[in-house]
Amino acid sequence: MIKWDSMIKDDDFIRHENVPLTKEEIRAISIGKLQLNGEDIVLDIGCGSGGMTVEMAKRCKFVYSVDISEDAINTTLKNLKKFNITNCKVIKGRAEDIIPKLNFNKVFIGGTKNIEEILNRLIEKNTGKIVANTIVLQNAVKILNYFEDRENYSVNIVNVVVSYGKKAGPGYMMLSKNPINIITIDKII
Amino acid sequence: MIKWDSMIKDDDFIRHENVPLTKEEIRAISIGKLQLNGEDIVLDIGCGSGGMTVEMAKRCKFVYSVDISEDAINTTLKNLKKFNITNCKVIKGRAEDIIPKLNFNKVFIGGTKNIEEILNRLIEKNTGKIVANTIVLQNAVKILNYFEDRENYSVNIVNVVVSYGKKAGPGYMMLSKNPINIITIDKII
Image 1 (cartoon, each protein chain N blue to C red):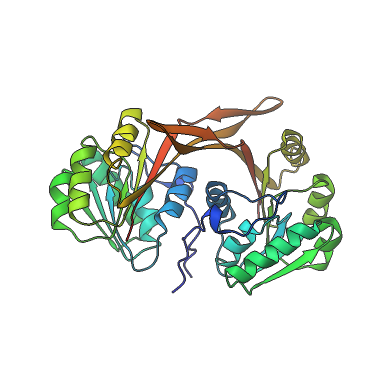
Image 2: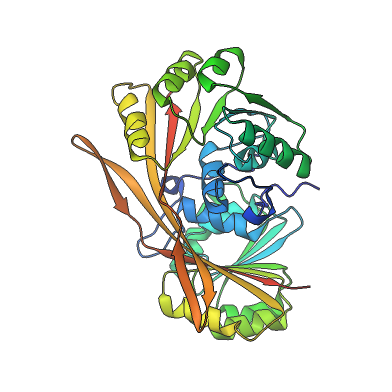
Protein backbone atom coordinates (compact mmCIF):
# COMPACT_ATOMS: atom_id res chain seq x y z
CA MET A 1 0.00 0.00 0.00
CA ILE A 2 1.27 3.45 -0.86
CA LYS A 3 1.72 5.71 2.14
CA TRP A 4 0.50 8.84 0.42
CA ASP A 5 1.32 11.27 3.14
CA SER A 6 4.54 9.81 4.39
CA MET A 7 7.24 12.41 3.98
CA ILE A 8 10.70 11.03 3.34
CA LYS A 9 13.27 12.12 5.92
CA ASP A 10 15.91 14.54 4.62
CA ASP A 11 18.65 12.17 5.74
CA ASP A 12 17.22 9.36 3.61
CA PHE A 13 17.86 11.18 0.31
CA ILE A 14 21.12 10.53 -1.50
CA ARG A 15 23.07 13.80 -1.49
CA HIS A 16 25.85 15.39 -3.53
CA GLU A 17 27.84 18.37 -2.27
CA ASN A 18 26.51 21.67 -3.60
CA VAL A 19 23.26 20.15 -4.87
CA PRO A 20 20.44 21.59 -2.78
CA LEU A 21 17.57 19.63 -1.21
CA THR A 22 14.17 21.11 -0.39
CA LYS A 23 13.77 20.35 3.34
CA GLU A 24 10.98 18.14 4.67
CA GLU A 25 8.84 20.91 6.14
CA ILE A 26 9.11 23.07 3.01
CA ARG A 27 8.27 20.04 0.86
CA ALA A 28 5.17 19.36 2.94
CA ILE A 29 3.93 22.94 2.61
CA SER A 30 4.76 23.13 -1.11
CA ILE A 31 2.97 19.86 -1.85
CA GLY A 32 -0.05 21.22 -0.01
CA LYS A 33 0.04 24.40 -2.07
CA LEU A 34 0.26 22.36 -5.31
CA GLN A 35 -3.03 20.64 -4.42
CA LEU A 36 -1.74 17.50 -6.13
CA ASN A 37 -4.04 14.79 -7.36
CA GLY A 38 -3.54 11.57 -9.26
CA GLU A 39 -4.22 13.14 -12.65
CA ASP A 40 -1.64 15.91 -12.40
CA ILE A 41 1.40 16.11 -14.65
CA VAL A 42 3.95 18.31 -12.92
CA LEU A 43 7.06 20.03 -14.21
CA ASP A 44 9.82 20.39 -11.58
CA ILE A 45 12.14 23.25 -12.59
CA GLY A 46 15.52 23.13 -10.85
CA CYS A 47 15.00 19.68 -9.37
CA GLY A 48 18.28 19.69 -7.41
CA SER A 49 18.55 16.47 -5.40
CA GLY A 50 15.08 15.39 -6.52
CA GLY A 51 13.42 15.84 -3.12
CA MET A 52 10.29 17.43 -4.54
CA THR A 53 10.44 15.23 -7.66
CA VAL A 54 10.21 12.07 -5.58
CA GLU A 55 7.49 13.39 -3.26
CA MET A 56 5.39 14.73 -6.15
CA ALA A 57 5.78 11.57 -8.22
CA LYS A 58 4.33 9.55 -5.31
CA ARG A 59 1.23 11.73 -5.44
CA CYS A 60 0.55 12.50 -9.11
CA LYS A 61 0.50 10.92 -12.57
CA PHE A 62 3.86 12.05 -13.96
CA VAL A 63 6.74 14.41 -13.22
CA TYR A 64 9.16 16.03 -15.65
CA SER A 65 12.30 17.09 -13.76
CA VAL A 66 14.63 19.66 -15.26
CA ASP A 67 17.98 20.96 -14.08
CA ILE A 68 20.95 22.60 -15.76
CA SER A 69 23.43 20.88 -13.45
CA GLU A 70 24.87 17.48 -14.29
CA ASP A 71 25.37 16.77 -10.57
CA ALA A 72 21.71 17.59 -9.88
CA ILE A 73 20.50 15.34 -12.70
CA ASN A 74 22.62 12.46 -11.46
CA THR A 75 21.53 12.95 -7.85
CA THR A 76 17.86 13.08 -8.85
CA LEU A 77 18.27 9.90 -10.90
CA LYS A 78 19.84 8.15 -7.91
CA ASN A 79 16.98 9.19 -5.63
CA LEU A 80 14.35 8.10 -8.17
CA LYS A 81 16.00 4.69 -8.20
CA LYS A 82 16.29 4.55 -4.42
CA PHE A 83 12.60 5.30 -3.92
CA ASN A 84 11.37 3.17 -6.85
CA ILE A 85 9.89 6.11 -8.77
CA THR A 86 9.18 5.24 -12.41
CA ASN A 87 6.61 7.89 -13.39
CA CYS A 88 9.25 10.56 -14.00
CA LYS A 89 11.48 11.80 -16.81
CA VAL A 90 14.65 13.69 -15.93
CA ILE A 91 15.91 16.22 -18.48
CA LYS A 92 19.20 18.13 -18.41
CA GLY A 93 18.96 21.59 -19.88
CA ARG A 94 17.54 25.09 -19.62
CA ALA A 95 13.93 25.06 -18.47
CA GLU A 96 13.05 27.92 -20.82
CA ASP A 97 14.09 25.76 -23.79
CA ILE A 98 12.38 22.62 -22.53
CA ILE A 99 9.02 24.03 -21.41
CA PRO A 100 7.59 24.49 -24.94
CA LYS A 101 8.19 20.80 -25.73
CA LEU A 102 6.36 19.34 -22.74
CA ASN A 103 2.74 18.94 -21.65
CA PHE A 104 1.95 19.49 -17.99
CA ASN A 105 -0.68 21.23 -15.87
CA LYS A 106 1.24 22.26 -12.72
CA VAL A 107 4.73 23.56 -12.10
CA PHE A 108 7.05 23.54 -9.12
CA ILE A 109 10.01 25.89 -9.30
CA GLY A 110 12.71 24.95 -6.82
CA GLY A 111 15.34 27.23 -8.26
CA THR A 112 16.20 29.05 -11.43
CA LYS A 113 18.24 31.95 -12.77
CA ASN A 114 15.97 33.23 -15.53
CA ILE A 115 12.69 33.44 -13.66
CA GLU A 116 11.03 36.01 -15.93
CA GLU A 117 11.79 34.14 -19.14
CA ILE A 118 10.54 30.94 -17.52
CA LEU A 119 7.32 32.64 -16.42
CA ASN A 120 6.86 33.89 -20.02
CA ARG A 121 7.11 30.32 -21.31
CA LEU A 122 4.75 29.01 -18.59
CA ILE A 123 2.16 31.69 -19.35
CA GLU A 124 2.33 30.79 -23.06
CA LYS A 125 1.55 27.20 -22.06
CA ASN A 126 -1.49 28.39 -20.13
CA THR A 127 -0.21 26.81 -16.90
CA GLY A 128 -2.92 26.68 -14.24
CA LYS A 129 -0.83 26.45 -11.09
CA ILE A 130 2.75 27.39 -10.25
CA VAL A 131 4.40 27.00 -6.84
CA ALA A 132 7.80 28.66 -6.63
CA ASN A 133 10.24 28.38 -3.73
CA THR A 134 12.95 30.97 -3.55
CA ILE A 135 15.55 31.93 -1.00
CA VAL A 136 16.58 34.94 -3.13
CA LEU A 137 14.64 38.11 -2.31
CA GLN A 138 15.10 39.53 -5.80
CA ASN A 139 13.51 36.44 -7.36
CA ALA A 140 10.54 36.66 -5.00
CA VAL A 141 10.01 40.29 -6.00
CA LYS A 142 10.44 39.50 -9.69
CA ILE A 143 7.70 36.89 -9.46
CA LEU A 144 5.35 39.17 -7.52
CA ASN A 145 5.96 42.05 -9.94
CA TYR A 146 5.51 39.79 -12.97
CA PHE A 147 1.93 39.04 -11.96
CA GLU A 148 1.16 42.54 -10.63
CA ASP A 149 -0.89 43.60 -13.65
CA ARG A 150 -2.00 40.17 -14.80
CA GLU A 151 -5.49 40.15 -13.38
CA ASN A 152 -6.29 36.60 -14.50
CA TYR A 153 -3.78 35.24 -11.99
CA SER A 154 -4.00 35.18 -8.21
CA VAL A 155 -0.74 35.36 -6.28
CA ASN A 156 -0.05 34.32 -2.72
CA ILE A 157 3.27 34.51 -0.85
CA VAL A 158 4.26 32.99 2.46
CA ASN A 159 7.68 33.06 4.10
CA VAL A 160 8.62 30.09 6.25
CA VAL A 161 11.38 29.84 8.84
CA VAL A 162 11.94 26.42 10.36
CA SER A 163 14.26 25.86 13.32
CA TYR A 164 15.43 22.38 14.26
CA GLY A 165 15.96 21.39 17.86
CA LYS A 166 19.44 20.04 18.49
CA LYS A 167 20.26 18.25 21.73
CA ALA A 168 23.04 20.16 23.46
CA GLY A 169 24.02 19.45 27.05
CA PRO A 170 21.07 20.25 29.29
CA GLY A 171 18.51 20.94 26.58
CA TYR A 172 17.62 21.65 23.00
CA MET A 173 19.08 24.53 20.98
CA MET A 174 16.79 25.73 18.20
CA LEU A 175 18.95 26.12 15.08
CA SER A 176 17.33 28.04 12.27
CA LYS A 177 17.21 27.07 8.61
CA ASN A 178 17.12 29.83 6.01
CA PRO A 179 13.85 31.69 5.39
CA ILE A 180 12.15 30.35 2.26
CA ASN A 181 9.59 32.25 0.22
CA ILE A 182 6.82 30.05 -1.15
CA ILE A 183 4.81 31.77 -3.88
CA THR A 184 1.64 30.21 -5.26
CA ILE A 185 0.19 31.39 -8.56
CA ASP A 186 -3.24 30.28 -9.71
CA LYS A 187 -4.79 31.03 -13.05
CA ILE A 188 -8.30 32.33 -12.46
CA ILE A 189 -10.62 30.43 -14.74
CA MET B 1 -11.49 10.87 -6.98
CA ILE B 2 -10.08 11.87 -3.62
CA LYS B 3 -7.48 14.63 -3.86
CA TRP B 4 -5.23 13.21 -1.19
CA ASP B 5 -2.85 16.08 -0.95
CA SER B 6 -5.21 18.96 -1.42
CA MET B 7 -5.01 21.15 1.63
CA ILE B 8 -8.20 22.98 2.55
CA LYS B 9 -7.79 26.76 2.66
CA ASP B 10 -8.03 28.25 6.15
CA ASP B 11 -10.85 30.52 4.99
CA ASP B 12 -12.95 27.55 3.89
CA PHE B 13 -13.31 26.18 7.42
CA ILE B 14 -16.34 27.21 9.47
CA ARG B 15 -15.06 29.24 12.40
CA HIS B 16 -16.28 30.21 15.88
CA GLU B 17 -14.75 33.05 17.85
CA ASN B 18 -12.12 31.84 20.34
CA VAL B 19 -11.93 28.35 18.84
CA PRO B 20 -8.45 27.95 17.32
CA LEU B 21 -7.64 26.56 13.89
CA THR B 22 -4.33 24.93 12.97
CA LYS B 23 -3.15 26.95 9.96
CA GLU B 24 -2.66 25.39 6.53
CA GLU B 25 1.14 25.34 6.58
CA ILE B 26 1.29 23.88 10.10
CA ARG B 27 -1.31 21.28 9.12
CA ALA B 28 0.78 20.29 6.10
CA ILE B 29 3.93 19.85 8.18
CA SER B 30 2.09 18.02 10.99
CA ILE B 31 0.44 15.60 8.56
CA GLY B 32 3.86 14.91 7.08
CA LYS B 33 5.27 14.21 10.54
CA LEU B 34 2.36 11.84 11.32
CA GLN B 35 3.32 9.72 8.26
CA LEU B 36 -0.36 8.92 7.79
CA ASN B 37 -1.53 5.93 5.82
CA GLY B 38 -4.92 4.42 5.11
CA GLU B 39 -4.76 1.97 8.01
CA ASP B 40 -4.08 4.53 10.73
CA ILE B 41 -6.55 5.28 13.51
CA VAL B 42 -5.69 8.69 14.92
CA LEU B 43 -6.70 10.42 18.12
CA ASP B 44 -6.94 14.22 17.81
CA ILE B 45 -6.57 15.78 21.27
CA GLY B 46 -7.82 19.36 21.46
CA CYS B 47 -9.45 19.29 18.03
CA GLY B 48 -10.50 22.97 18.12
CA SER B 49 -12.17 23.89 14.83
CA GLY B 50 -11.47 20.43 13.41
CA GLY B 51 -8.84 21.57 10.91
CA MET B 52 -6.50 18.68 11.59
CA THR B 53 -9.41 16.29 12.17
CA VAL B 54 -10.75 16.89 8.66
CA GLU B 55 -7.34 16.71 6.97
CA MET B 56 -6.36 13.54 8.85
CA ALA B 57 -9.71 11.84 8.21
CA LYS B 58 -9.18 12.33 4.45
CA ARG B 59 -5.92 10.42 4.73
CA CYS B 60 -6.47 7.65 7.27
CA LYS B 61 -8.96 5.03 8.39
CA PHE B 62 -10.60 6.75 11.35
CA VAL B 63 -10.20 9.76 13.62
CA TYR B 64 -11.35 10.22 17.22
CA SER B 65 -11.58 13.94 18.00
CA VAL B 66 -11.62 15.12 21.58
CA ASP B 67 -12.09 18.58 23.03
CA ILE B 68 -13.24 19.92 26.39
CA SER B 69 -14.94 22.92 24.80
CA GLU B 70 -18.55 22.77 23.65
CA ASP B 71 -17.85 25.45 21.03
CA ALA B 72 -14.92 23.42 19.67
CA ILE B 73 -17.02 20.25 19.47
CA ASN B 74 -19.80 22.07 17.61
CA THR B 75 -17.36 23.76 15.22
CA THR B 76 -15.63 20.46 14.48
CA LEU B 77 -18.98 18.79 13.83
CA LYS B 78 -19.92 21.58 11.41
CA ASN B 79 -16.65 21.22 9.52
CA LEU B 80 -16.99 17.42 9.34
CA LYS B 81 -20.38 17.95 7.75
CA LYS B 82 -19.14 20.65 5.38
CA PHE B 83 -16.33 18.44 4.08
CA ASN B 84 -18.37 15.19 4.05
CA ILE B 85 -16.17 13.40 6.57
CA THR B 86 -17.86 10.33 8.02
CA ASN B 87 -14.91 8.31 9.38
CA CYS B 88 -14.72 10.33 12.57
CA LYS B 89 -16.19 10.32 16.07
CA VAL B 90 -16.24 13.56 18.06
CA ILE B 91 -16.14 13.26 21.85
CA LYS B 92 -16.58 16.04 24.39
CA GLY B 93 -14.53 15.55 27.52
CA ARG B 94 -11.09 15.37 29.11
CA ALA B 95 -8.62 13.52 26.89
CA GLU B 96 -7.00 11.87 29.93
CA ASP B 97 -10.35 10.25 30.80
CA ILE B 98 -11.16 9.24 27.23
CA ILE B 99 -7.80 7.83 26.10
CA PRO B 100 -8.08 4.53 28.06
CA LYS B 101 -11.41 3.74 26.37
CA LEU B 102 -10.24 4.12 22.75
CA ASN B 103 -8.07 2.13 20.35
CA PHE B 104 -5.76 4.11 18.08
CA ASN B 105 -2.17 3.94 16.84
CA LYS B 106 -1.25 7.61 16.32
CA VAL B 107 -2.00 10.81 18.19
CA PHE B 108 -2.10 14.45 17.20
CA ILE B 109 -2.15 16.92 20.10
CA GLY B 110 -3.32 20.34 18.99
CA GLY B 111 -3.72 21.71 22.47
CA THR B 112 -4.16 20.60 26.03
CA LYS B 113 -3.76 21.73 29.60
CA ASN B 114 -2.67 18.50 31.29
CA ILE B 115 0.07 17.41 28.93
CA GLU B 116 1.96 15.19 31.39
CA GLU B 117 -1.13 13.27 32.49
CA ILE B 118 -2.09 12.81 28.83
CA LEU B 119 1.39 11.54 27.99
CA ASN B 120 1.10 9.07 30.89
CA ARG B 121 -2.14 7.72 29.44
CA LEU B 122 -0.67 7.56 25.90
CA ILE B 123 2.41 5.68 27.11
CA GLU B 124 0.16 3.20 28.92
CA LYS B 125 -1.61 2.60 25.59
CA ASN B 126 1.76 1.90 23.94
CA THR B 127 1.18 4.67 21.38
CA GLY B 128 3.69 4.43 18.51
CA LYS B 129 3.61 7.99 17.23
CA ILE B 130 2.63 11.32 18.77
CA VAL B 131 2.80 14.69 17.02
CA ALA B 132 2.18 17.61 19.37
CA ASN B 133 1.77 21.24 18.34
CA THR B 134 2.20 23.83 21.03
CA ILE B 135 2.48 27.59 21.10
CA VAL B 136 3.23 27.49 24.83
CA LEU B 137 6.94 27.22 25.64
CA GLN B 138 6.29 25.53 28.98
CA ASN B 139 4.33 22.76 27.27
CA ALA B 140 7.10 22.20 24.73
CA VAL B 141 9.63 21.85 27.56
CA LYS B 142 7.32 19.58 29.54
CA ILE B 143 7.06 17.24 26.56
CA LEU B 144 10.82 17.25 25.90
CA ASN B 145 11.57 16.64 29.58
CA TYR B 146 8.95 13.90 29.81
CA PHE B 147 10.82 11.83 27.23
CA GLU B 148 14.34 12.82 28.41
CA ASP B 149 15.05 9.53 30.16
CA ARG B 150 12.71 7.32 28.18
CA GLU B 151 15.23 5.73 25.86
CA ASN B 152 12.68 3.73 23.91
CA TYR B 153 11.26 6.95 22.41
CA SER B 154 12.87 9.28 19.90
CA VAL B 155 11.95 12.95 20.14
CA ASN B 156 12.25 15.62 17.46
CA ILE B 157 11.27 19.29 17.77
CA VAL B 158 10.96 21.91 15.05
CA ASN B 159 9.76 25.47 15.45
CA VAL B 160 7.95 27.02 12.51
CA VAL B 161 7.27 30.68 11.82
CA VAL B 162 5.08 31.46 8.81
CA SER B 163 4.59 34.98 7.52
CA TYR B 164 1.78 35.80 5.08
CA GLY B 165 2.22 38.38 2.36
CA LYS B 166 -0.47 41.06 2.48
CA LYS B 167 -0.90 43.44 -0.43
CA ALA B 168 -0.39 46.98 0.86
CA GLY B 169 -0.01 49.92 -1.49
CA PRO B 170 3.13 49.42 -3.54
CA GLY B 171 3.96 45.94 -2.40
CA TYR B 172 3.54 43.03 -0.03
CA MET B 173 4.01 43.29 3.72
CA MET B 174 5.04 40.01 5.37
CA LEU B 175 2.85 39.59 8.46
CA SER B 176 4.01 36.94 10.87
CA LYS B 177 1.91 34.24 12.48
CA ASN B 178 2.89 32.96 15.90
CA PRO B 179 5.83 30.54 16.22
CA ILE B 180 4.55 26.98 16.61
CA ASN B 181 6.53 24.13 18.14
CA ILE B 182 5.94 20.81 16.44
CA ILE B 183 7.20 17.86 18.48
CA THR B 184 7.30 14.37 17.02
CA ILE B 185 7.63 11.36 19.32
CA ASP B 186 8.29 7.90 17.91
CA LYS B 187 8.37 4.72 19.90
CA ILE B 188 11.51 2.82 18.97
CA ILE B 189 10.52 -0.74 18.25
